[in-house]
Length: 438
Image (cartoon, rainbow, N blue to C red; front, side, top):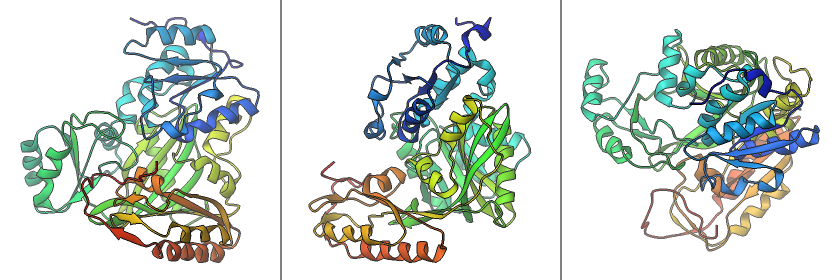
């Protein structure tokens, strides 16, 4: 058994920064720390990154890479030798391992150990938030469909629309909305299957379907103080029966009418799940009678979000972590310097692309900051169903001091997307979007 006795000797405020699974936005930690003169070490929760994160892995950024097998003991021993200043998860697949390692190596900068499950498992996090007295969406996490049936009857939800999803997925993977009488097929379809991170769905989360406006609050916490790096508003759409397809995302000013309410709720959520140190990503649905938790993740906002946050606010969760760990000051809130919108490309049919060159027009849009378009002639597209599928296709980032310029750019992106010609094909496997050339 690994002991945490005499832990203070393992921490050095001048030691390296350790990033667990430095994928997705977590890949931005290494260059930021390196630029600040801080060495970095990677810890991997598996010998190879999950397939969805593999394109973002940059092993060349790390002079030392530690791979953890079933036994974390050797990794703990090596990390104690290195005497790091912090252990931070880079993305969702690294959250659980970081929560194992940090209390044993840098406990003064670790999150509350006994609430670790509430920072990763959607059922456990909702239970912790409810126990803290905050309202949550009515839900049940179980492996027993008969228990779901009893719960629906007891809560008066029989026949109502429901949301069914894996408890430990990411990127809206396998999140589906079903009519009340269709939940059982969706439930059994998920139970016992691996999600896109390779984790077996040993239970399934069933929720009441609620409607409202969705927000995300991105934070950096130190000593239990939760600073706000940005607040964004999501727009999601249904796509061929699939809910939770990202359409766009806008950064909000800190004095927007709804910002104070969602920030207060997010800080309560972070306290409830034992978040004390590091970046977090809190997704919230604002309904007529208040806020409801969608989920919280104890890692930076994914998809390269910190790069775009710098354009909007001049700062990011990654920059705040580096600044705090190098003796700098972290503000409690943020300014909005530019209006920024991310526009996610969406495939609404299954077929073969024949005129991808039409999308080259995005590069002529006023206010364009970044374009990542991954569609080529001959690609076979499937319906976009989740965030991973959106990122496979690509997205456009618009930024300008004038919101009218951003709005006009958004309309132009959708006009160009609507000009794509896609030759229909009979879908032989429509479980997830695919791009043939990748």
